[in-house]
Image (cartoon, rainbow, N blue to C red; front, side):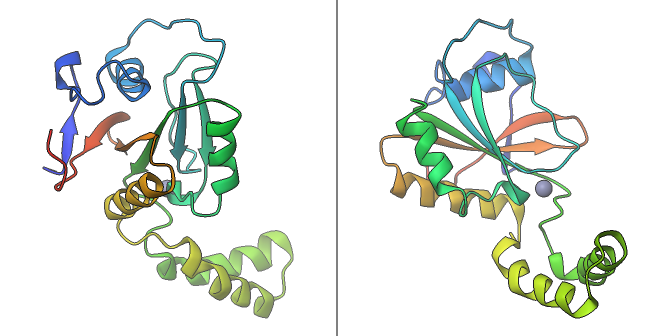
Length: 184
Ligand SMILES: [Zn+2]
């Protein structure tokens, strides 16, 4: 996976992120940095709702918005709030592998059956629900999606430092996603 940059020492963190909350996130989660005490949030993390992921970060360090596929398109007010009222100046957007929001159509039957059997929906309502919302929440390729979201958010919040990261399930570590059009 040459699109991912491994972070296993402080020197692996690009200078543009060194000393920033993004760099600190990588140090806390990947490098076991000792927790510091925070009274205010330093970072906004956008990450998937997936139950298999857990970040190693100190109390008060970050706001976290969790949504399928780390999709923040429908959470903009919360992003604005974290910046305007919460005072954060950095966002880390986390993709992950094996994401359930990739190829939703492959789980259509399971989705409909599950709503009918588990939640008591009528089959037709469940099917309409799927067709109405799957296109909004499908992310396609998880890395490309997060890179696109980072570009969108940088235009929307030009003074905010925004970093695309990847959480890999096999080792529970964070990786930086290489941005081909960004020189480091
Ligand atoms: Zn996911």
